Amino acid sequence: MMEDTRIIELFFERDQQAIQELDTKYGKVCHKLSYNIVNNRYDAEECVNDAYLGAWNTIPPTKPQSLQAYICKIVRNISLKLLYRNEAAKRKSVCEVAMQEMEAYLPAQNTVEAEIEAKELAAIIDAFLDTLSVENRIIFMRRYAYFDTYAEIANRVGLSKKNVSVRLARIRRKMKKYLMEREVFV
Image 1 (cartoon, rainbow, N blue to C red):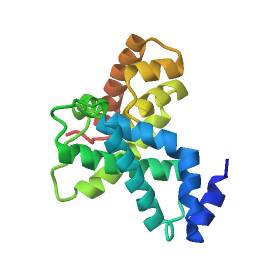
Image 2: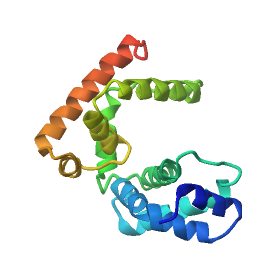
Image 3: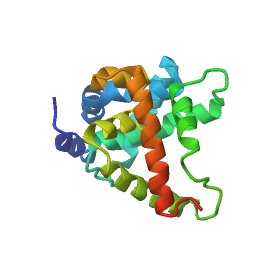
Image 4: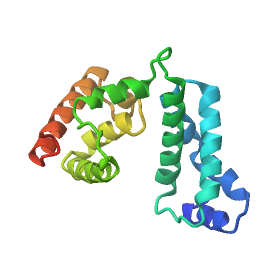
């Protein structure tokens, strides 16, 4: 499998092989991420293809430090836009459930400064994640970044679904307390 730096070089050379190498290396994770959000194989395929086009259009000038994180962010954003566009009321996806779990623990973003506040909140959440054990950080990220189900997370980390559920509830409470201490909540 080709190294990320070489794949990025292919993008900079405008070599179409870059897309094929990107798909070979990260296609499976991209498809799973998108499917976890949109809950439809055809829509997931379209989102991943759109993400590859997005990567093609943004690399260059962007030179991502982590190609996997970069492509997953594009896939997640495109998939979430599709989910919102389709209103997803008729098909309750894992993503929607995960986001509903987090709503009570994050402040509302209804102000003009929402973009700046979102970046500040992201930095605070990053700092919070550094306070967690590696296992709890993996559990949190698998649920809220990759939208894995409790069963998938349990299988990945070798715990029961119930244990994953309890840990996530405790992490959310701990995060809320952490955010309140930093006056994110008023």
